[in-house]
Length: 196
Ligand SMILES: [Zn+2]
Image (cartoon, rainbow, N blue to C red):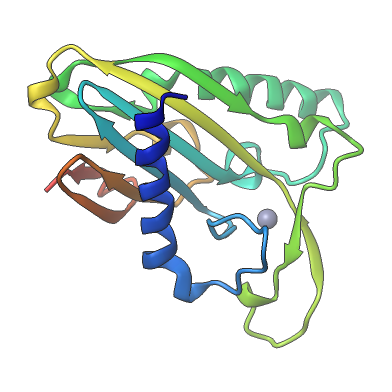
């Protein structure tokens, strides 16, 4: 990754921590984003005519289960998920900026490796009945690059993940351009994020 992009991502990670940090228990080494069923996270960095997007999601939102795939149907579901996530142009839309997906790195490994423990952490913060218990959670991630033919028209993005995945109720979008940043909780009915 180029130095400049690394720098942008460092800023973005910092912004996530500052804005979302207070909600998290945050053990060292834990991932920055919360794992909440029905909710997926999208980080967006606009760098000139390139837009870098990272998607993080509990696997239950995407395939309906959180365990290593074992049945034939589950293994097929994971293969189909990977294909869908690799078709990023139908998941995220940048309107008149004419941005096309030029690279997609999709990680569904946790669902395929039966020895992997998944993303294990205490789930107690998401429950209000006070019991402490451990559950295994599985996350899927993807990193995308979009190249925009009309960079001057980069003004918003539309989250179309809701059409592909009925299990996603909300997508938390954190975005960063070279001069602004913001966040928005999107839903199927309110999926447009304007960079202003
Ligand atoms: Zn989970």
